[in-house]
Length: 402
Ligand SMILES: Cc1ncc(COP(=O)(O)O)c(C=O)c1O
Image (tube, rainbow, N blue to C red; front, side, top):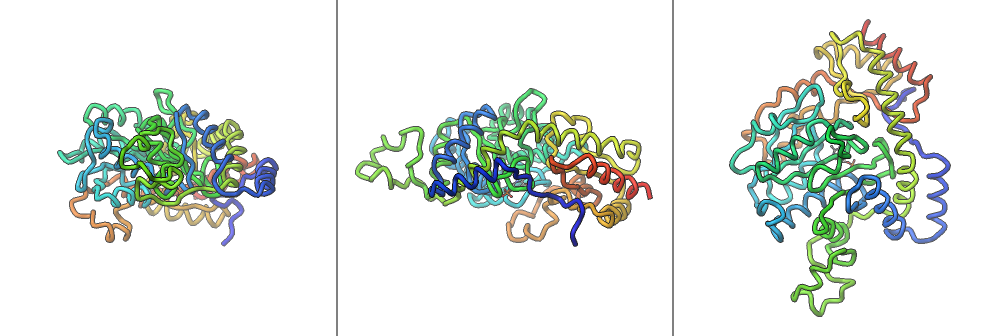
């Protein structure tokens, strides 16, 4: 079925197309100068010391979390001690499969916490409820552009000797109440630049960190485990490395999750458009919120109270009950506007959990269940015209009121 308003559509313009063409013309397409320039621009934009560009948000989680695991064993003084198999990591039940897999790769046990229905993010109170003696860290997941709770989670982690990683794949451009860019709160963070996200490199993602050690571990994990892109020469000073050609010196069992020059060239152009994109996303969210503002007995919009710090990757709605949601969802789609579940709803309800061996003893997550049963979201494209937004507002109102 095709929709007049799909969940996502391409927003590349003449500048992105010209950047693709001129990159192709250079004949140098694998990771090189454009990637380096995009990383520099991303670091400058965010205020982070390092940005490491990879081929997806999932890869950013994969190597960002793995870098923290290796660092915790090499330099436990930097991480409140080592992360060992069986250690518990708290993470919300409203997340994504590739938030979890990096933990499982190292025998770390994800312990799920519930979320706040007003923000869709976990709070410190949600995390405190599932903290045990084995808790060693947190993977926070600020969803859909909502920065709420991150500052408090960092303070709570620091007070309790816990490591914090941010899976901020959905929240590029959001700003926390303390004025920090999302992605700058944890020891490291992940962004996704998949085409429906805030900026698009077709596929792509990045890790941000202020730690030179974490950055070097990410450079190695990104490219086969080699030392070639290290900023520090800590490893080269190591006696074990003497006699190995430094261009082909492998210090970790790594991957290849590099992006290409074309992705980076697109990213450089998209980054210039961020102020416009964010302003439009917020304006669009405000318009849709006000179109249904008198229907709060039927539907509410999580995040509506912080529109200007939110970065509105999509437009989530929580209905008063599941019948109302089902009826409205059918009507919205029949009206030509595509919808989808709010991320995964409750990840514990997906069959993938059977393969992970972590289901036993997980707490019940009533708010994640509520999202699963009563939530939907619409896409939110920053290029959406006033005419399209008027159409969406009309479909929304009619579908909810009728
Ligand atoms: C919370 C979260 N983490 C990770 C990812 C993975 O990002 P990607 O699709 O770029 O691999 C997503 C995808 O949207 C996500 O929503």
